Length: 85
Image (tube, rainbow, N blue to C red):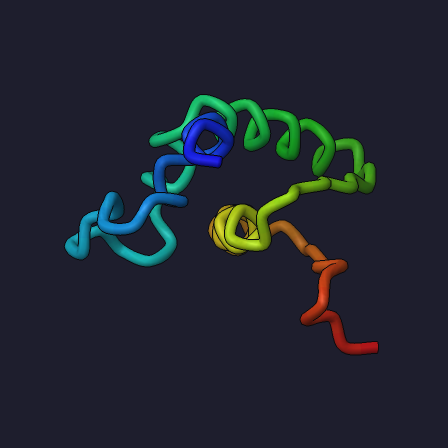
């Protein structure tokens, strides 16, 4: 489980994110190579107005992706147990 977290984003571990960091900052993207790739991919898809579906086994990873989407002003809808219809 710890290896799966490590491969996704360091902020999935408790105490890694510095308290001095702003909530929606570039540190969300730059601290993970996977997020840097997703950021580039989403930027390209946003230009061409494509829709993207991202799967994750961790709802905490979806929280991080949601923060990145908010930072980049990308419209999103979460399809998990918190979705209101």
